[in-house]
Length: 80
Image 1 (cartoon, rainbow, N blue to C red):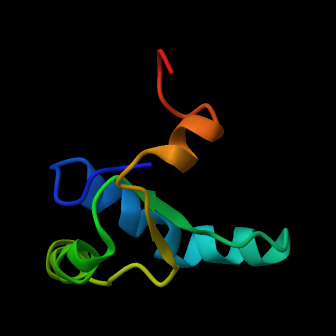
Image 2 (image 1 turned 90 degrees about the vertical axis):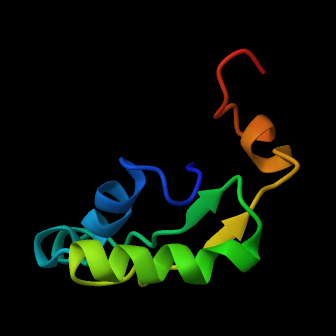
């Protein structure tokens, strides 16, 4: 889970696109999704920023969880 355009988000979000990670995910039949606390409308700009700073944009679907309902239901937030 992340908020778009924070200094640590771009490198971490681009990492699953790397050839090494993609090969390993494919071998294990793992599919990646992103869960963001930002609205879906923000994701295009965020993906462009990652493309610019990391050399490629995320190639996985993004879920906007602005009300934190998914994050809380999955126990992803400390103290919730």
